[in-house]
Image (tube, rainbow, N blue to C red; front, side, top):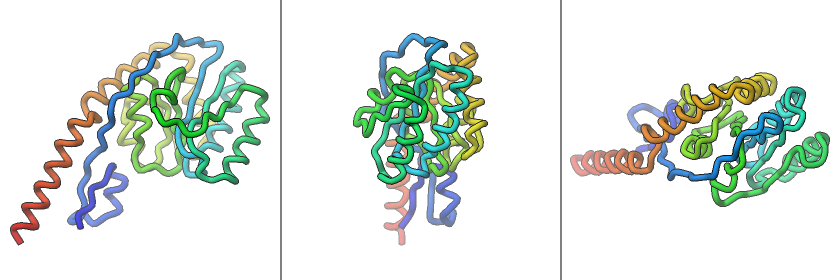
Length: 222
């Protein structure tokens, strides 16, 4: 069987003769963007509460961000995929004080998870690709992401990146985006342009259909 992967990082795991790359397509997300308040920025991470998603790194970075932005608030949206790890993360977050870190749980609608965020952080230590980052692009939310797996292919130059597992580098990237209004604007505009150019559902359907047709013709010719 032929394998269709969602990133070059995944494609590299398979023999070239048996796999092809089709980047995912994502429906656009519309949110009401909030007016940025530099005194109290809202920073979010969206994904399963699991070690692979780098939530512990995100909380370690939050500790450093609070030194520069004492009124910053952090939101984590996603199911408790690892109950023991999730409890540990909630205990770690509680040390910041009431209301500083909010766990939203599983959120069915991407717009609900992205609404109200000034910045999305993708702290993953392992990641094939990221639907959430693409949704943030379409919604006009700037993105800071690790360099894990296929994330560099998704983010490219449209966001800020840091080495996976490096919480200090993550904090530095977050702070840089928060203190530079022109950088945030460039990131938002670049993300929206990237979404329209590369990540729309229509493009994905066309490429998938072409791959399926080619494989059918190949099998029929045998």
